[in-house]
Length: 120
Image (cartoon, rainbow, N blue to C red; front, side):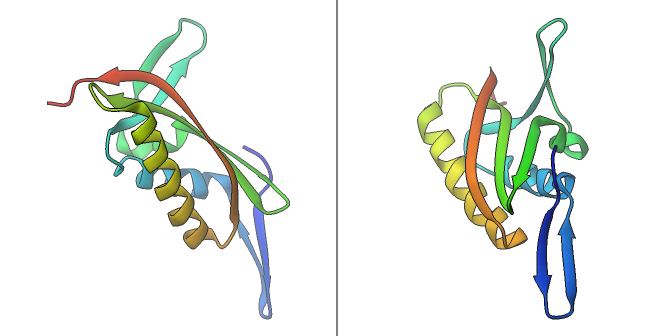
């Protein structure tokens, strides 16, 4: 995660930590249709792990440059859904919600589908 986002107001400066953005974006993402959850990938052995609610931010990388946000999502999708439809919904929902939450612009959202799971 990189630089913090900053906004200047007439009363002072507001600084937003990238982890705050990651946590919020993760909570928005898991509410999206077809998303089972965020994924953590162990680079050493290639094992993908579904993250618990308190650790959603580990499946998201946030980069901020010139107050523009780039998000990388590592997700697990539901079996049998259209990945294109799920990704499109995720992008539009997260873009709107995070921009409203932070007051900063989303420059890009990258989605990495790390796995597929059957939803019980």
